[in-house]
Image 1: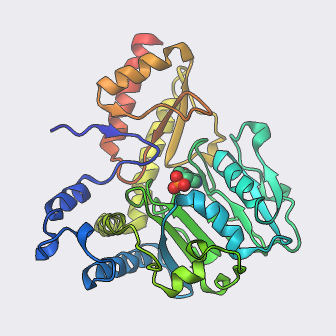
Image 2 (image 1 turned 60 degrees about the vertical axis):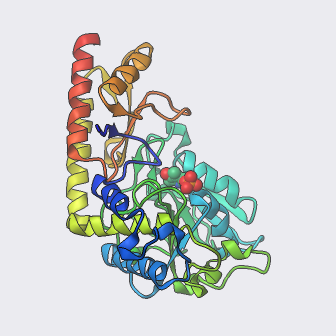
Length: 359
Ligand SMILES: *Cc1c(COP(=O)(O)O)cnc(C)c1O
């Protein structure tokens, strides 16, 4: 068996040792005579798996008891609606910052449920920048301020936390667990699992407890964070297998030395790849240097007529899923936690060889 290097933006690569452990436990989980997928979510086994996953996640991110940790479904996209439904009435005002395709989707969905003020946008720079905080036009009475710390498609990442009086609500889908964050800076952190947490089907919401209980009567029970918190994320059947796999990923992250160690590795991986792009006249990355994502690295070739050949040869070399998002074209290498430095080295060697033959 040969496992390829996988640069998919999501669902993304998972650590091989996690997959091996899941394989070994697949038919008979810890001597239970069943797979974990086949057990009641109310069983002590599955409840234990969920509790351990939450405890490990709390340890990794340093999440205090002031915050509830919710394991939900529906992806980050469902939270685009859940955020206003839980935090703002129809006539309230919410501030949003638009730095790319995922911000835009959050804004469009937010508008269905509350009044939205787009406080700043980098659309004029084709989403290659982050508007400086001084330029943001925040509302005096916003229910919350929503932004996207890492734009997965444009490859733009915040390395600072904006100052604001409203609670910060952030879509961390593609940056969570890639480096330490100070959870206390935020009101709500949410993320789809399929980038840096585990398989698709699980959604993480970390919410400051004083922000619970604000949803109106019309908020569906399945979107109500208070309902989820009151029921330990088991108001209905949770995605038990995805939760189990996420728990294995959290254990793996602890074994790697936690998020400070991941940050060192991720900075080294991204640093090498950007250096290779910048030192060549053949490859280019459009993002302002101080906002370049550690997780998603888009790049273009000097001649886009070569894109197809690049992708075909990369595939043949075992470097998969490098095609850029359809909205921006070019290439994108997603180098999440589970994508090792060896994968980045192999990509750089391939890029340099391709340039030599075609540049
Ligand atoms: C992938 C992604 C989403 C969409 O997540 P789903 O779980 O598919 O709904 C939203 N926001 C960001 C930043 C993402 O990377």
